Amino acid sequence: MALLTPLFAFLYHLPQVYKWLLKPYYIASLFMSIAFLAIRKTPGICDHLATQREDGNSCDFDWREVEILMFLSAIVMMKNRRAITVEQHLGNIILFSKVANVILFFRLDIRMGLLYLTLCIVFLMICKPPLYMGPEYIKYFSDKTIDDELDKDSRVTWIVEFFANWSPECQSFASVYADLSLKYNCSGLKFGKVDIGRYGEVSKKYKVSTSPLSKQLPSLVLFQGGKEVMRRPQVDKKGRAVSWSFTEENIIREFNLNELYQKSKKLNKTKEDKVTPPPPLPPTPPAPPALSSSK
Image 1: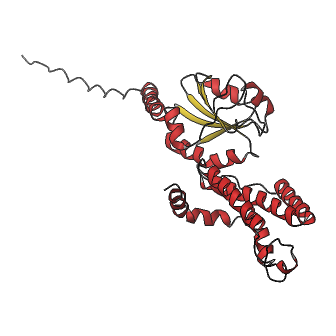
Image 2: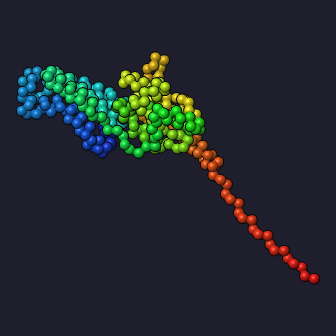
Image 3: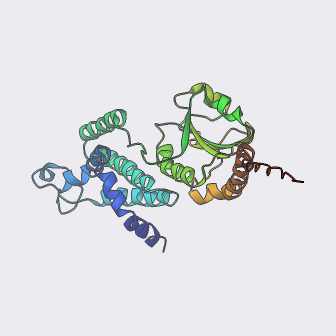
């Protein structure tokens, strides 16, 4: 059952997967992920490769290569158990496929390993995963606007995501956060984002570490009356982020979004009643003419 669930999820999202795979980033990543397989199985090339197989067949995997691939496949399956989006599933597969290729190429020939590792570094520097460009009701803050906006109206509740564009976790979470904003945004409950990879002062003030080892990206913080009420992931006394899954269900439950949304709608209705002027009074009918009495 543990294997069938991700399979059914993949088949359900297959049309989206095709759409993403047609983007240049994923096309290049796909070729890099299967590089060792292609070289090991391509006639004319594989004939000149070294092998440890007893039959001397250099166009097939030896037992050590199979062992490495099986081990990294198990790691991918473990990582994907915590993945919440198709992008994260694909990202884990691509990442660990490249790791496997690096190990296999170095084992085959150190020169091929160095060449492949160099290509991976260049690819990482010049190619970034495509950013989410779908619909959303999110306000983007800068270091000069975030404080003013949070303090502008004490009746407004803000949920703010602290993110960095270079973080794969933040990129994968973008579509989930956008969906939440479409479902729950109103004038009393608003969603915001600030790129702390760009605005370092914001990261220091709100104590969100931008280190890739901190596991604090992304961070969701709930503000009421301009004050922080809660955040996920939580940070322990040693400054380490407590592991937390950024699924839509977890966010709705932990942040009480349904309750906040209902309260915000009541607030909106109260504000509208105060702003809406009373209906004009009907015009006063003219007084009837006085009757003259004749003697």
